[in-house]
Image (cartoon, rainbow, N blue to C red; front, top):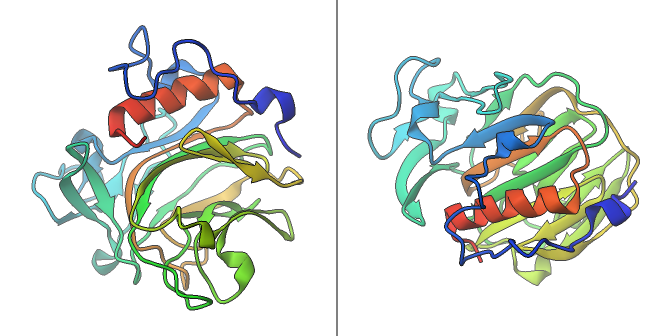
Length: 262
């Protein structure tokens, strides 16, 4: 299922990707109902070197926990020291990010079941080039059920080297040969089979809505045994509904003004 007309690209006159310092009225993602998860790696007040007590304070510290800013307390955690991404300062638009090493770094999130309609936004930079069918990169995000894949950027099969949705079979949208994944910052948004990058459509695929439930991983495939992503992650936002074009424009403007992507 795709968004159809409710997920079009007719932006309001206030959608000015770089010219506005912020959306009129001081927009925040919490202004739109249905916000389920919001991870912001530029916000040091939400990043901890332990289980939510000691905030990060220096470049290259390992992040144990990233707090969910949605208010739902779906915090991202990693209890194993060697598998924690690093807090890196002054990376994109002078903001901090989480750096995943591509070897075993990942976050786990115990996310309650969400209905099949959802919309995602991700600000990231894939730091490793693809090389044919060689596994050089990995999943930015994957869920246990519903298989919401922000970017399966590599793998052992050609179908993995795409932006993709999974409902029991792969629905691939953007091929890696386009080069958009590697060493460049991107703002990706989409939901229910439709994907956009930096405000432009990458395409859509018919997709049967599947609820997200049981858990989510950031930086790897859900099973956390392969396809780790070597990425710089800026921000991740998940809504438990199909956003309107105006709502999508508001979130994209907020993220683009903040991170200066395009």
